[in-house]
Length: 181
Image 1 (cartoon, one colour):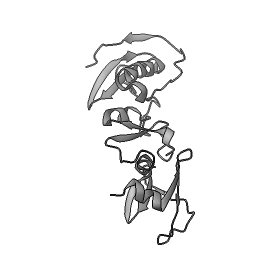
Image 2 (tube, helix red, strand yellow):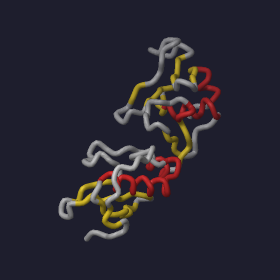
Image 3 (cartoon, rainbow, N blue to C red):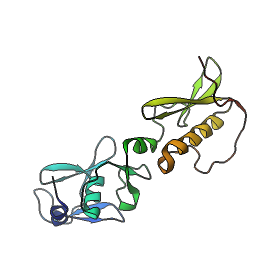
């Protein structure tokens, strides 16, 4: 595994831009070349001494002198943004809390889905590998707000929110805790 000293011998890292620049001629890498290539998930990988590393881990090593012992979370959720102020240590639960809705999400809002049999919106949150029912709602915005409230309770500053500014849109709710069979 690479050390901070070796890393600084072969690359320069700009903590304000998150960009790594090659310092010495290494194989096809010329001096001054911007390093890194994205993987299918969007993380940047950099090869040093024939080993591939996540750029965010190398940034952490470069600045703090050691590899992180837990996950590194990208505050803005952009996996290629490796400036040091965008990186923070996170346990697995916290890191999973800072994830936007997937492309498969039909409501467009995290933690919200349509229950056709009841013609209502359902809010739920996944925390520590368990789903928690948050309520049944007429308005999907209210369901999303219920998710946001629970996300803040469970994930704190790591919570990905549907409405970070929490603007009031509608307020018709069926039941915040009723179970649907």
